[in-house]
Length: 83
Image (tube, rainbow, N blue to C red; front, side):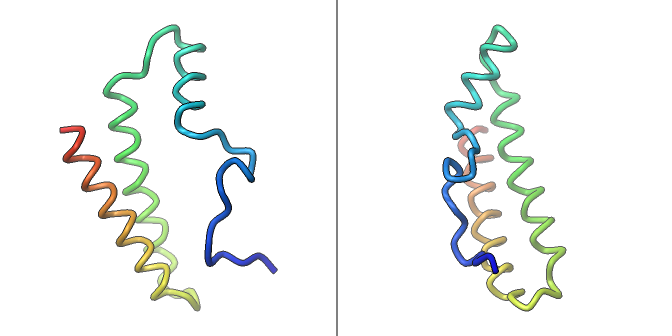
C-alpha cells in the first residue's frame, strides 16, 4: 500500500523541478516563458485545490482539506507576488 502522508520528492518520481521545466521551455520555444509561466503556476495551484476538495468523501478528508488550504494560501501568495 502506498503511504500518501508525505509526497515523494519530484526527483524521486522522475519529475523535473521548476528550473528544468523552464530550461526545457526556453530550449524548445527559443525564448523564456515570461508572465505566462507565472500565470500557469497560480492557475494550476488553484486547480489542484479544486481536485483535492473533490475528494471530500475520502477517509482522510480533514487532512486533505488542510493540504488544500495550504496550497490555496501558496497560490494567493504567488498571485500577489506576481501582481
